[in-house]
Image (cartoon, rainbow, N blue to C red):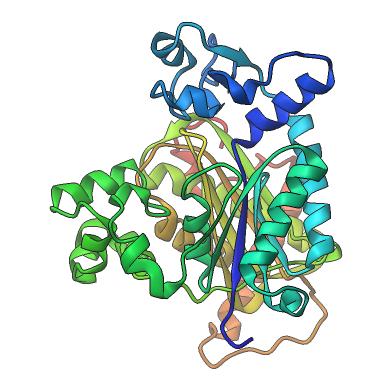
Length: 403
């Protein structure tokens, strides 16, 4: 097959489904999936929000990310259960292990969703739709929970297809179907179009994804910067990315931080990204490895997570280079929603002694050498006197004491 085909496999209301199954296995007579119910934290803490909801709870207007107290006002008889993250990781590992056995070209993007490349297994099935249906039905019969599978010739469109009507369904959204299936939807339905971006677009008179697709991208960039162009690309089904699957031995080096207070400006986020870059780059240097890929992760205060990655022209262990790439990715990702967590991950690791092909556009070697000596000196000071022995000037004035 010449046209690429991607599956996006997404567990339906993962946390609630997995908790419901555990309670049924423990002898409960009630299936949380069949009644108005939520998974939520302690209402006395900042984590007292709805993490997952059942379909009957959704009928009351309950939404993920809202305070648990609000959810109870909408539905006084609501049943709630605390999250069990150890259980969720176990269920996730079981599902991914099964899917990897179906096709090794798998990219897990969160605890409950992944992409799969159909090409390596296409000879085993009559069509992508038949393969997706078999995967979906096997997961339900084998594990007891349901998934949606989105199918497309573009990764981003497969993601949006899996968000169509739920649960336990297969949907297609090929690039030639976007006018019929995608463009009539409200802009808020577009992947990576958060509340803030949707409000900006509505103020511009852009109400549907079709309106967005037909808008001059320069207008979008003037209001939403590079994120505006990303949204325009997605509205038009433009996405050239493929499946990125790393073998276990090639897992990268990364770090993340849950913020003590939500970051609401780029300047706040950049300070955290700089600190994370120092940590990740330092660990690369300690392990004598270079990173060929950088990924930035954002988790919003609504508990929605997004990430974006880029392959570097040449592998690096430089704090500054990793920081610049992380910030560039952040600018493409962030939609203005308050940020709960930030992370940086590196991948495609190579030994520092491996030969490196430098392009004509790389920085002058003497500048790179000067930067390496500076990083090495900072590493030595921190090893001797502790991580907080020396800080960059941009961090000294930070209002966050945990930087």
